[in-house]
Length: 327
Ligand SMILES: [Zn+2]
Image (tube, rainbow, N blue to C red):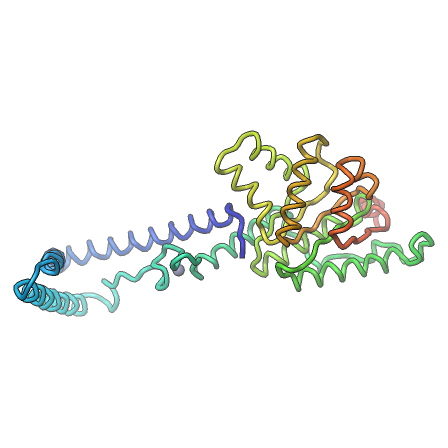
């Protein structure tokens, strides 16, 4: 699961904070114990001494070293037993056990090269927050209203906008619920106010809830980030740009609303190539048709967008206008 560096950063910060809280709690308990039972402090000092002796003895050759090591171990063990007995008679059970925040990774977030389940869980939580913020947090498939779309057959399509939109809706739901790294790409084409952003946001939320790393950006913001990484390269801007290429699902909303230019065309070409080659799914929404795209970007980009994506055509009347008229 590829979470964006931003999500991992926030999750690691939370884990580090939790680890620090736990350690500070442990220190406070120890100070309390030392104050109440001074012998425990003495024992701790002696324990450190026997550890050092054991370490020294371990490097010593011959039977002399072995004997010293055995003695240090024995002393260490009896001190530990005394300490445990004192702790048990003065404090509640487990009071002086320095339990780490996570038994698997000790609170580092990693077991070897792999992310520990404790950090993974924090990533999932941060991922959900991110998508909730980006999409305003209210879009869900259950709130999609088909009654906004006319149910008269439109001769241009040979079907009613409502029937077409119901197909689109079912397609999006299936895509989100069955999302996997092998899912293909979707291209939403159609005018303003037909629900493209809404359904894209629904997909983002469901896929993120299922634990995948999702990046959701409007075109002006996405190209802004890529431009920063290119012309104002810092570790932060580079990481943000890398996330757009590497996240499990990239949702690019409103392609064509960015300021056009040479940079946008080449950045879009690279982004599409990298993701298509890497088999990383995308959902792109746009008002542009294939001719517009060829003119605005390049014929190669238009052919990638039309060849490499399943196209869903959004039809009907502008929902915002309908809502204003009181429908
Ligand atoms: Zn862990």
